[in-house]
Image (cartoon, rainbow, N blue to C red; front, side, top):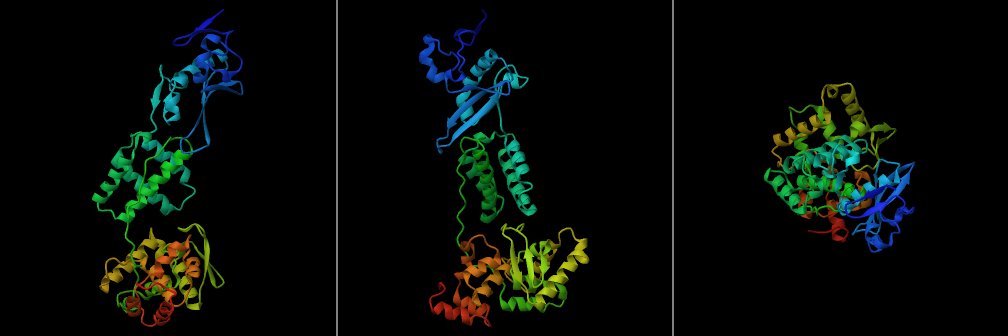
Length: 398
């Protein structure tokens, strides 16, 4: 009878118990005291081949986690021999490490298979490619490129700790990035780590904290500033009408490029930033501007531009500088202006949420906490109703 040997104990082919859950040494009484310890990783047969089955429960969850490792054999004896190799690194497998086992690679011994940051990024971005807008993918890629530059693409993901993240955040700040931009990149990294925790590629993830940013008032374009832009001699009337369209509708910069006009409504698909489709009713003048903008995008000057939306944004920034506006103001300020003006005119915060396409009313509420003195000065022709509501306690006075 053939005798097979693991590192310490001899056993025979006949002595192996048929129940794979009994462990390597089956019912051999002399090894009975070892059964509980060695029965953690077990054998499982699938379609004629054996697998090592490793089970554990994460410390932060009651959910049982399972990893099946192919043993590449239909021989039960060989399967037990290879199961013994798996058991040697079982605790490390449960900790999230990957291994190159001799029968699965060209190595002659078991070695740690590093799951590098470069591997993690490439696999994660591939899964997200068809689920997110192109702009979001670009932002994700920017943040991850920074992370690779700081950490190193060959750095094992499972060894990245909280102190690495904190140092990375400080490094981004030293490069002149704003806190808002840093937080955006940190959210990208956190999303990637949470994904790999969910699919059991990592046993735990580092703590990733957002930087605290003081609440600020909306950055809007005052009535006087907007009128000054409308009076610029060098600015083509087409751009003046387009800027008015954005102020009166509150749409995001790229949304007219992906929307269609259906009767008096523009239909904005759920591919926009909030992933919430919405409809905005236009009066006759705004319908005309929307059609003009669409023609410019498809048949006019916009067709010769690689990024027509970026062109419009830069044109508006040039206009702002021409009138001496504060540098903090930019194209997105037109969206803030829409929200502020609508609240002044009596639109409820919940209706404004729908018009803006916000996923939560909490995002919209930032527009309701404004300085009444500034409002009366910045929007003199429509501020009266807002101030009257504030006196009735319907808005918060600063």
